[in-house]
Length: 369
Image (cartoon, rainbow, N blue to C red; front, side, top):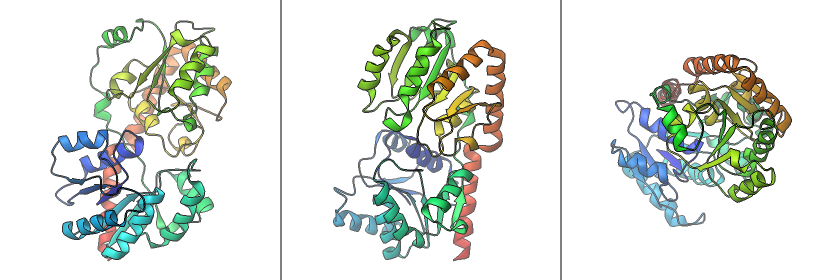
């Protein structure tokens, strides 16, 4: 059973759907339980009708004990052996109690945040109390593992590193680039720099926009695509106006055609102040795009600095602009970085590798019982 808050748009949610989609059904029966509403990508997953049992809207509030009883009954009905939770305070707390009450054989939690912005103290307290009862804690990168050992005090033998994976095939499909550019009002030869991230403070979009201001002084036809939505959108649109670059910036909102978007981007950016492992960076590299990324979280485990892209300090818009200008001046180097990035994903970060790691872990833990 995958126990999650919801399956709305986001990297964690896409991870669950990817794993659910590719898990070997000859070996595993899969149940998904959402505390809240199913969410947009969850609805899309259910509509595919692959046979997965999905339950949603199970808890009305964080103190809804009747909701916990409903999940307990589902665990018993479905005869669950393995419970897999995403480490938020609510799923960690109730997941641990459900695992103990239900006699779950294997209980795994995946930690998704490094240096959490929200409810940091509460998360630490719950982790300290609950993680000793977990069979395995999933870290998403080697740097992430070291953080969990040093900052959260988790024993290293309890941590398993499983990197995220992307589907390379999705980024190999042909796209009519000229037509798509025209549909967005972008000229055939206009340089395009893009960022894929929800519009929230930790993603550092102001850094992206301030770098854009410097870039257009040398390449005035450059277009900047901001893909994603969130509560910061109005502020960011105002900032683009204040910087007098609103005609260069396209706010595209949430999109389902990410491979098509990346097909017209020349340089892909991650400007986060806080990150664990960025799915967007893996998608950038899968699409053969050179990456400029802040050295936040475990990004250095993904981007080979100077080979598949550039790593810069968080908040340093001048370094971001300088790196972008280097690549705009040397298109051949940009192409070579993009090609090396795709090779790096193919060798290390595919969905098949990620799924195989999880399947091996699940079976190994079951055999130890």
